[in-house]
Length: 365
Image (cartoon, rainbow, N blue to C red; front, top):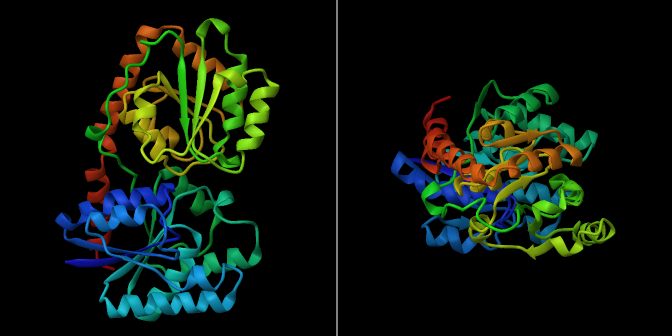
């Protein structure tokens, strides 16, 4: 049995954290035993992981400082090194910037294999800083392997980073299609559009609101924004300014977004940046047609013209045109959504993702 310590920033419901919580229990049957170390071990996923039999560890990092505190970083490296040695892990696999930097150092000091991840386009991975770029390059230099969650993200890392490990792979996120009740798009009186994600600049919800404002009134379109975040006030003001406030509903955070997806006619992902979106896979598994921007791995998941439309980012007119095209034939929405569900079943299941991940873990240097 290969023992893997997975290191995360925290246990909130972010994309990387949610994926790890879903895939880790499936690795045991593949010869891989996973334990989780979160720099901040609080958060709603802690109970889910422990209920699945995944042991969770914390570090001194959240209590003693943040990324700019050198002493706190060194203490955290020590915490991780001791954990790797005392719990007899074979390798460490980290997700996102600070876990990558700290785990690479700890893994090398402990004499363990080191895998780092890329799950976002580089310009969104960390602020512009010579120090941060330098730490990133150093972690690349000592890592044995890099795993990206889409081909687009891997290409971007290769174009923008130094000293990447020679061993590189793409392992897509996955979902369990059987957990998603198929939606019934095209059966309501109006067009019910939903988007799921943090209300933050990288998710681009302002373009969804702008697109909604330009749709023909005959569509009876409404938009549900699932999520919370720093952009909520600005987005509410925009909806009011564009006179679509009554058609935009801010429903807040949903621990389980499946009912929101099952009740929609179309899923919209207007992001400025993605790696490989869990929300997109969940919408496809729910049998929804999709309009998504051409960022990150969106076009690797969604087939343009078959499961919906891929449109340029930051372009509300293109989003609106794609929505209007799909909605012009309500009876055609269900077959489009069904094609998306079949694609997830064929290519993006949790079992497929776990198998690819286990293959990387079990491979020798």
